[in-house]
Image (tube, rainbow, N blue to C red; front, side, top):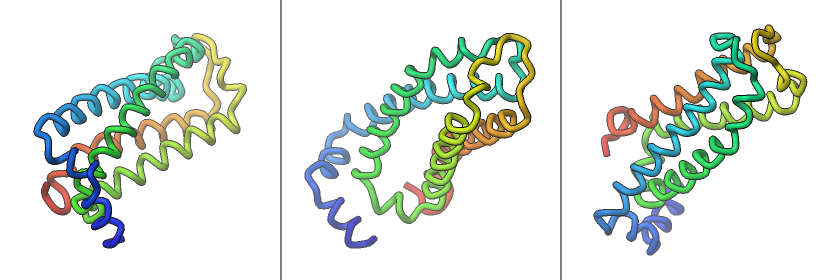
Length: 161
């Protein structure tokens, strides 16, 4: 891993990310916008699954998922820029690894939902959510909140930036 980190830090892209004073703040802003889109929409979806928003038809929220995907892509691109800019800070940071684990859990959970719970997609306003979908919604919400928490804790847990 150390060899990969050293190689990555020596790249022109890594130097560009940390060498220009405007790149990192721009990426932070875009990352925040992307996270707001993902968490806003996925959180709304998850709250419907766990029946906090039972009066909202699930299809109405699903229509917003392409916007959440745009937010995820923004986060992926800017997150990679952060990692490429300072890989040594990330690979040695317990908060980053926890964030990555939460992100992977959220992705696997979404895949599980799409694969196993297709009928749940048609939940109407007031319809009861099956227990399996409630569990998936709760795991998703917890995972995304973990991504948010550990991302915010990057400078404070493990090694400081």
